Amino acid sequence: MSSLDYTFAFGVAFLTTLALTAVVIRLAKILKIYDYPDSPRKIQARPIPKLGGLAVYSGFLLTVLAWIIFFPDAFGLFIKFNSLFGIFVGGLILAVGGYLDDKFALPPGNQIVFTVLAVLAVMVSGIQLSYINNPFGGAILLDSLKVLGYPVFGGLFVFFWILGMIYTTKFLDGMDGLVSGIAGIGAVVLFFLSLVPEVNQPDTALLSLMFGGAILGFLPWNFFPAKIFLGESGSTFAGFMIGVLAVISGGKVATALLIMGIPILDTAWVILRRIFYKYSPFEGDRKHLHFRLLDLGLSHRNTVLVLYFISAGFGVSGLFLQSVAKLVALAILFGVMILLGAFLVISYRKKNPDVESKN
Image (tube, rainbow, N blue to C red; front, side, top):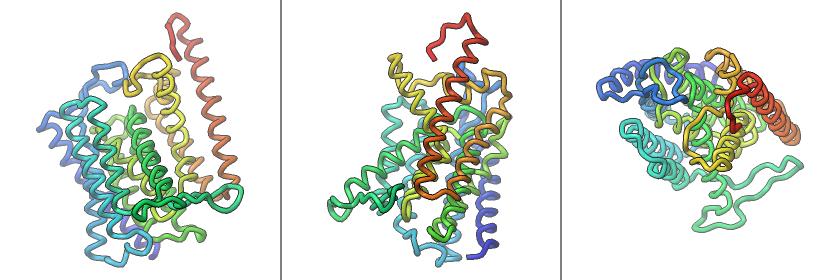
């Protein structure tokens, strides 16, 4: 497959989603599905239409289906058609659940049903992980115990990995263009990783680029000041796809961790903090890293661009690092997050000495 083929696929996904988003904006307005600035966490100045995830999912789906019809040999080498079907079904489940949540504000206990079903859909379709690379040499086998031919430990890893990625992007979705941009960066990095000689998975690369084109086709509508938000369906579908792309046809987990490392660590910290202070882990607040940067004085755009830069920098490094070096990079990433978090908390307290802070 040539670079022109990949460019064409990216362009089709990008333009399809770009056009569909205009339709979805109108649909959201007709259905009166808006995100209202009704809490401190909502930083927009006016109600913004939601449902953007429907455009991303539809743009991605239509592009992949077009390739299956007109270029049937594009898939099937590493990504089987039953796996594609599982991804389509999982995405559809998230789209339906996201629409219901955007429309009726479902309680967290109901929302998680859709995310779990979406992950189970891809697992049933055959997406599994038999091993992960050991950074010190060899591999860690995850298929030593099988039930009906499916590796138990590998299945558990896939389940919690994809579910964790879904909730990472869901919790990250607090600023215009943040999730769509970082997910787009992640998809492009995974595209290049799929093409390195050690991996050499052209159909995985193609699928990554199609998702990248779809999510980045949404970004012009979503970047500050946003004309539409991803909504529940989009914020969960973004993490779902990054999670799937990282494990399909062999693990690319370490690189995905480098791309999404800051959001993952930020999400983990915020959840632990909420539990410590006896809040619901699903209760929104302004303690996320992006809100802290905003409170420190960065503009909306600059805050998002800083987080783009961090994700892209660590993600690109994953293309050139070997296993042990990736482990070192992950340790550095963890250290960067600790230092950055401490700096922001101390700076916030100095700037707001009279504000009671449970940081």
